[in-house]
Image (cartoon, rainbow, N blue to C red; front, side, top):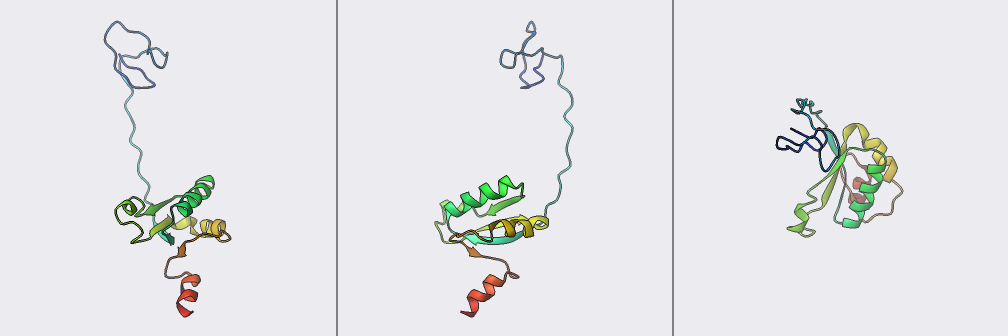
Amino acid sequence: MFCPVCKTEYRAGFAMCSDCNVQLVNELPAETETESEYVEYEELLATHSPSDRALLKSILDAEGITYFFQGEYSTIYLFQALPVRLMVNKDQVARAAELIKDLDLSFSLGGPDNPAVNEDVDK
């Protein structure tokens, strides 16, 4: 017997799940495999600041932007030796850039096509 909610297996003689309070079933339904979608990412910026990352995560999560911070967990071992790079779904880069353009963060912008990078180099 199995709980259809939490998937816990019970011995014979039980009829209800003690945690979920639902009727047990003889066998669980077969789980369907979902096909993973390929996502192409593009670097939007790089930062050393954990507080910048936290703020960016809250903004991007609220807007449903697909992203990750490349190297986020290696900063524990490489304390600020390398910046953490914000990688955004290529289809959402323009929207993400628009959302964060007016923020006063301590990050350095990244990406070869970013005009801010070229301005910094010329100074």
